[in-house]
Amino acid sequence: MENLVGLLRSEFQERFQQQPLVVRSPGRINIIGEHTDYNEGFVLPAAIDKAAYMAIALRDDDEICLQAVDFNDSFSIRISDLRPVTNASWPNYILGSAAQFVNRGIPLKGFNALLVSDVPIGAGMSSSAAVECATVFALNEVLQAKLDKLTMVRMAQKAEHEYAGVLCGIMDQFASMMGKRDHVIKLDCRSLAYEYVPFKLDGVKVVLFNTNVKHSLASTAYNTRCMECETAVNWVQEHVPDVHALRDVSEEMLNQYVLPRNKLIDQRSRFVVQEINRLLSGCADLQQGNLRALGKKMYETHTGLSNLYEVSCEELDWLVDQVRRNNAVIGARMMGGGFGGCTINLVKEEAIDELYDSLKPAYESIFRLPLTMYQVAIGNGTEVISQ
Ligand code: GLA
Image 1: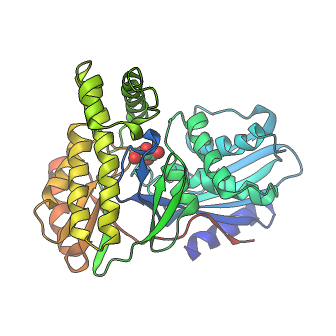
Image 2: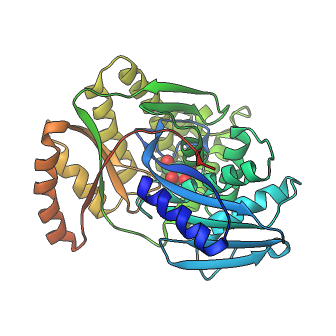
């Protein structure tokens, strides 16, 4: 991290001849509770020790000048021209976040920003939420807008909706902004009430295996899933008016009002209803120190995501199947939106290297893609690291 920040500071000074404020905003993992956030259910994410770093300083004019160190690319636009760009994706996360200040009537000023990140892109670790949260947080500081963290979480989420076109729930931005070292966040995505649950596991580590599969249609499929869930809610609502989201729906309601109408919509919504319950009991397992029971539920989540929600892929399924009967892997499943990215595994520390050594060559020869591994630690949320 020190290297990245040092690099960022010196590049910024060289390019803009100014002293920047530097903000760090992490990626996230999610233990259990997938595709539940936009259904007003619960999630159990945590911020990780990989992050986006933004150096920022205000300008005297109304230009927004951006540079991404990782892409060796730059982009400029005037505040009055703010809109999503089509020829590159990285500026949109920053511009969309800046636009939220304008939307709220907070006077935006021109600024210079330099970005570097070690959150792998397209790996399901929310590299985009990290950039959005870094931007909103950094602008809040330099504009002295005095926004509270929850407001900033919502602004970062809207940036994703409006400038990246993904109708995401609130999990990623919440975890990035609100993360706490060695804790997972049990978040109620309806009320945004949350609880930090200690997550220091003796002898067990969180290991991510990255399939390196990136599906360009993932965001379209994601929005389709959101709509399928909404359809199920509408159908139940015709009979039970006080149902507002899948959070309020039971499997009996699905049997009565959804299954007879459409099998696919039933399948999608059934996964979500089951997953919300699975998270609640998985969280109780964690609080009681029963990691094996939690791990078993992670495997069940994967099966549901693969068979019912259909957001997995061959590579993710293979990685989970390989570890299912391995006693050293307490739980495993695909993580995040799906269609590629990582699996999350709870692995006994002493077995990690051997596991990677056996999975890697087999994976690479079957799928002709590299298999990368990350051991992640749970860190703090968005913060200023130097000014
Ligand atoms: C993506 C979205 C989140 C959440 C997950 C699936 O990461 O950004 O809001 O819906 O997928 O759990």
